[in-house]
Image (cartoon, rainbow, N blue to C red; front, side, top):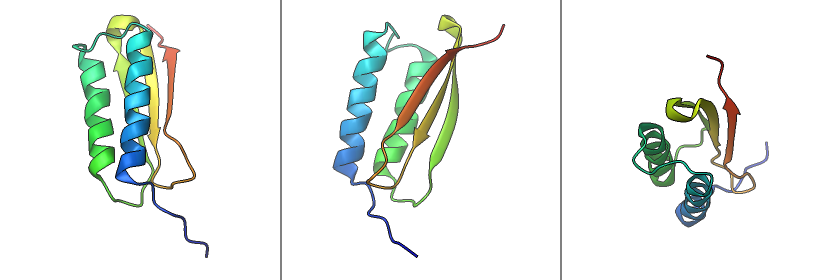
Length: 88
């Protein structure tokens, strides 16, 4: 069985910062509860050394959107964030 290199804390932090910048660029306010929830998940991921892929669904109610966040543990994978219109 192949062993995969774990993503470093520094690499996780770089990805998280990049994602947060992109979220702000599309107009998500940094005091929005969903934004704060996203940041909390990212902070937990940065500190974690678990060998588990974390997946979350975040409702951005103010914006009528639902986001999916996938946080990998492997160095050869990047975090994924997709936002879609949510059904009313």
